[in-house]
Length: 78
Image (cartoon, rainbow, N blue to C red; front, side, top):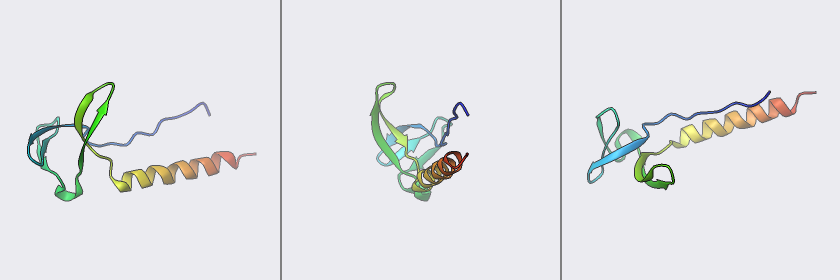
C-alpha cells in the first residue's frame, strides 16, 4: 500500500453575522450550539483568523477508531 487519505466533512469556514450566529458558504445561518453545532475561532497560515465549524467528538472518535483498526490490520500482515 502506498498510502491513503481520510477526510472529515464539516461546513468549513463560517461568517459571523451576529453574536452566536454564523453563516455557511451555502448561505444558511446557524446559532452556536444549535443541534450540537460548535463554531470556533482558529487561525491558519492559509486562511488567517476565522470562525470554523468544529469537528464533532463523534467524528474524531470515528477517525481514531478507523486508524486503530487499519493499523491493527496492516501491522498484522505476514
